[in-house]
Image (cartoon, helix red, strand yellow):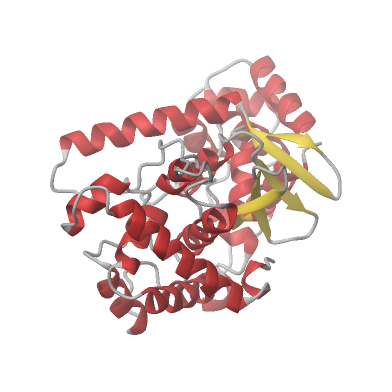
Length: 358
């Protein structure tokens, strides 16, 4: 069953509404039956398959509704099909409307894959889990540090987590008022395919701006943290690694991954003048995240801000950053450690407020 065929069926059976392209083919058949109110035979005739095929998909997704994220995703899509069409106002179009965000999410650039793959990559790390609580608009990804203490490494919208669960990219590990999820085999396969596609696009278009490589297993900071100095101590302690992860998290929440700048000074200018390219309506928390990135880059200044931007945010290798900045060999890791020390002090001065979600 193709997603295109299911989408065409939706338009024929329910011409006023159309499901987002990212919705799995089986879920579209389920919603045609449940939300659009069409019989199994009617759906089967419109799609050109046997009624038993539709029935199996309906039973499958009905059973999947035990998963709270899948249930919420199907409920919102169900409501979007049942609801009468209304003229969109500025308030209804706002991303603060969770239902409109989920039903407007399309497989365009940037689409579901572009938003979801960085978080799937985070979930490939050992001990990484996606945590979501009942009635909370955000989900978090945690990973245990060397001492076995869970540390937050990323924050994402609940709608995106629901879409990932509906596509079977994540599976529920523990269900309750606070549920935990891990990456599924289907999620690993989708991540591998996305990495291959990104690699092909990069090889075929030399003029295109280089994007973050979501296929990188570990960030440059994580790699450096495993190194030891002459005394046998870690080159980077856990506080410095956490500072890098917090900067990366704010950078992603601020929607700056697609912004092409030559150095930190140019990004500071764009943030100060509020001229960052992108959608006019941003998700909640984006403005606050951009302000945190701006304050941090101001504190770091030239040089330190450049190495932090490249290695912590863009996940660029230290040697590559050295060459781009024109520094001498093996100097990048020293400057990066100094930048991380400054970042750690900066975040300590901010206190715990920036760490709150929801």
